Length: 312
Image (cartoon, rainbow, N blue to C red; front, side, top):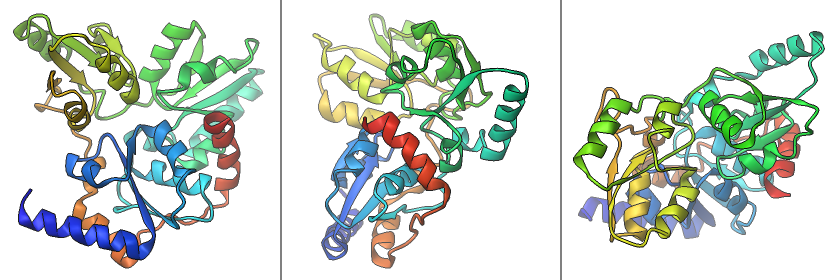
């Protein structure tokens, strides 16, 4: 580790004590950030972990909707996000006013439905929904929607298609997609598979159907970790999700060889929003006590939906 990084990490550790802080980090953060976190996980794990934090401050190393969720589930905590510009293409694709208009149109047409949102959405959007799902609990939550109700699933059409396949429930799908997972190239994937005979391919359900169908296993980040843990022999594993996930996989399972699946226009699909968080920004947000997630009136209703969906 370079000396400058070591110095910044030491500053962060001292500031954590001074500010009574816990650092939570998503698997899509850079490895050096995951390495200093008190807890790493997927969206569901992080939401649940946030409710167990005893410190007064949470530094959330992820994107804005994740930090919002931590604040909603912990109103009394100070929640800091190293960079407020760390957004999400999925959350941006389903603004609350547009969703509200679409829901009203469906009701005017006599449709009886419940709205299920992927956790990758704003708090204002969550406040309009009946359920919130992550890739880790989506199948279970879909099973809780009454059979006589239609399902409006927002905002990820690829995850929605995958849930239709595995649950058999027909859904009205919002036309959103993750900018990272949508641009995986099936042609490049097939070429990579041919160059690594006997390899295993794992894919996130946010990937398009052509990537999922070419994969040996489809699941969220935590499901991928569990799948790899059960593989008996050392092998090459192609990973069709945000490439920082490989840091976590290599840390746990060094007997395997992990390879990022290429995107249409690049060698790997790094999330530019996740990349906005840096060690320097973590240090600075602890030093300055900002940027901070502040309470919004929509958080009350969003909190009801989140607790019902993720904590019960």
